[in-house]
Image 1: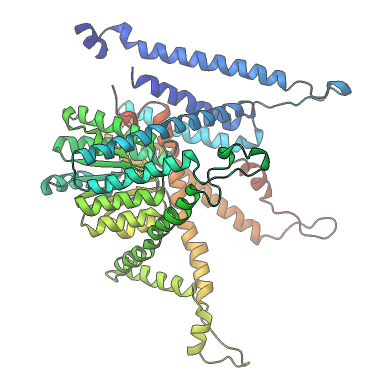
Image 2 (image 1 turned 120 degrees about the horizontal axis):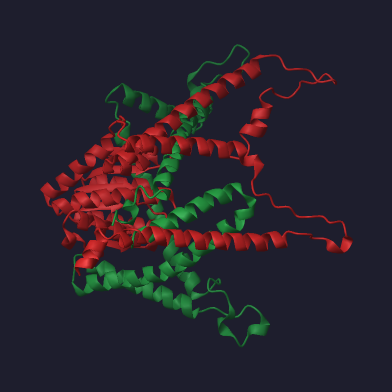
Length: 236
Length: 335
């Protein structure tokens, strides 16, 4: 029963969503389902916060490896929640609300929460994102080793695309003689890059996307018909 | 106690039918709700301008005819998939091509067991409403069952609370199914953060500290895919990844040992389950691909014919519209 009811709800709501896509009369159903999902997600967010606290408190209490990170996480979490909830540093935006110190928006410029976001959170996120450049370089170095024919093809294509993204005309002009009419000549690497991206890459991507679309249909049917219940933990 | 046990096993007819009855009740309630709401909707949609007496009505159609071709295509594909499932259920054997990434899953679990190291499973960074995440959770169930059989720790950090709840259910049920209920430890399936790079930092930190022997990245991924996969590569883990995001696939291919490309991610659960009905669905999917190929070829042929044949001139001497314009306007519209 604990699995049957969720499967029935998933099936009913799923099929209704399909019908609602084709029937304007049932549009309200889609909106209602989205509202329900937003409500459930909000409740789940509170649950997530609690779970996070319990998980890290347990790590600290058990003195597990890396418990110091858990302490930092809990401290950051607690400070951010308190600062955000109490709107520390936020001032009323209109003269009418002068007696209501909490009336300003929580992300008001100059507020403590804004400061945390602007000077702590954003730089840390940017740092993580910047690491991507180094990971791209190391992955490319491994992927472009000319081990066999396919790898050589990949390497040559990658070189063309890389050159096409740079000042290819200016670079190739240096090595090529001028045309008979005096104009400079260059290799059309940028055009070749455009051809690779628009024709070869797009066709490959579309082929994958068609497969994905059919996979989504089959997976959705498996869920809607209750054939695959593994996402709920399997059969009863 | 015995009655409860028998009831659970479905040996008492009343209990066996209780799920079906509950389903019918839910369906009845839902249909009643739709009819009532529909009636209110229809009442609201009656005359909007009664004062003018024009009797102008805001008619809301029950079917959007612009989506006819899309509806027919949906019915055709779903019908094919269902027919193949039914044929498979009746015993018709279907060949399903082996997928290297899926065959390697048991090898990855075995490697982790031999090395005495944990495994990592990342079900993507999106919520459970994404089908990629659901597909990832389906595979998690299978991986967790293998891990429970070998008693190898499986770490599942999630970036969404609902995903965490579903993942806990999946791992717990897998442990019970494997006959090892004590294997389940809810501290190993936990919520980290919804922030993309915060999640990556936490997972990569764990990978660097614990040095997992196997990493599974199956779900919806964005820019974090390469950071995760490269960190896994650096710690020497065997890596199996899969996503339907075409922009992230090259990163997984470059950094992982096995990659499930697009549709393979969705086929994985059916493939691993080995159930005939689910394998039949994969065959139905293949027929869909065949139909797509035929349609693409037909479309190419039509477009080529249209572009090389001379256009009909209009009365003012201009070139007329393309002959295939009606296909664009009608058949391809509404998708």
